[in-house]
Image (cartoon, rainbow, N blue to C red; front, top):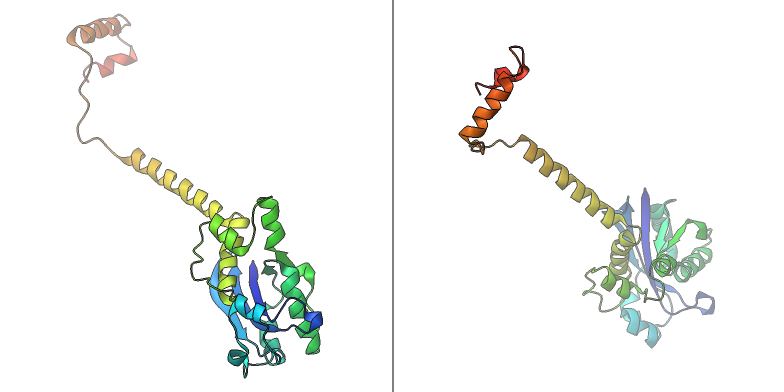
Length: 229
């Protein structure tokens, strides 16, 4: 199944007060495996960058000025995601901004019903534990050392790895690999042959007693044909 792992960066917390998207990234996964296909763009918000937001993602207004407007990349974005489910951490935040930009560019909003929110998934799986992206990377031993600041593309790539853990994909693969290894080991043992026969533990007296016992069974005893061996 094709799914799109998505993340955004913004100028603030609320699009209804004038905050805008400044970065959007999508990573394609099929059956929870990244395909290498992605969509990533920086966006000119046509406004200032509050210091609080700059400290989070490090995107200055000088860097963003001259980047495409959302309305100029909207069709490419919509084409990339298609009708695939969207995997987002704390999805309500990102979806409010995306839909605000879509409405601003006279396009219909995306339905929340297509969203898989990994934040409540993590809370159900790890109740009472921190469930930020950084905390989940630490829990699942995912290398997030490059994440000195928030960035939509890197965060999407990390979330794709976290999502695999949340749905049990990596553990299932490890179990399958373990079962295959066991089967292969059994097959090797079954076809292996001894290079030298094991010495008999039966002494001459025991062997004579056995021959006498077999002889007492009569001339048609099946065991007679093995006596010579």
